[in-house]
Image (tube, rainbow, N blue to C red; front, side):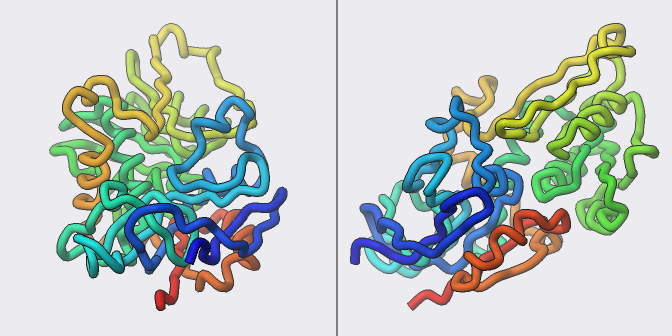
Length: 318
């Protein structure tokens, strides 16, 4: 077998089931995959900038931006052969029923981690990188703007810093319960805290960035973790921005932060992200589930629904 059913983005807002190349290496039967709503929505809309076409290529991506393209990077499967036969593994792979990858591209799940939750691994890896880039430490007053899945995971990690005061900020009042689950306070933008030591922005909106900058205290750092694709965002550089000597820092999971690069590999970071998922509380971040065979018809609606956190795809391995 050289191909298997896979989800392809075929035009703005359009998805189809088409054959996907199996690749080379050991055989993996997919159990679950996770939809990363922000990035995959930009891909489906054809909003990946020309300058990022090469950097945005996933390890097992097929096709080319803008279309047609087989895209995704959060798959959990069971190895069918070789040294890891029978093991559940995480892999950076698009939505596809079966695939082959080299063994060193497969990360075994830690004992006790349910495969259904492991689809959050790529998001947790992003959240871990955001915390590193922020420099957040014990006792800090920390604001996270945007209660999507990455924002919630970032707040979850920040809330576990000893003595940290963490507030998750969102325009949707229904996210207050999610903030409690993550172990932090909740506020809408009108009640956002001020004089924060660290602020992380993950709402992918100009309004959210404005809120983030208003939360920051003098000499504080604002980490911009949203990715806007081809969009342009107004940045409020007037008012007290200069007098407070604020710093806006970009963060992207595609690189290990320089201060950790001498010791941390991508494999070590991914393994740690999987370890950090061993908390039943994090099941609250899965907001829905769809059978793989139904995905082409539902994909656009899932990506356009603002209530979506991590949407999980369930497969029927043979």
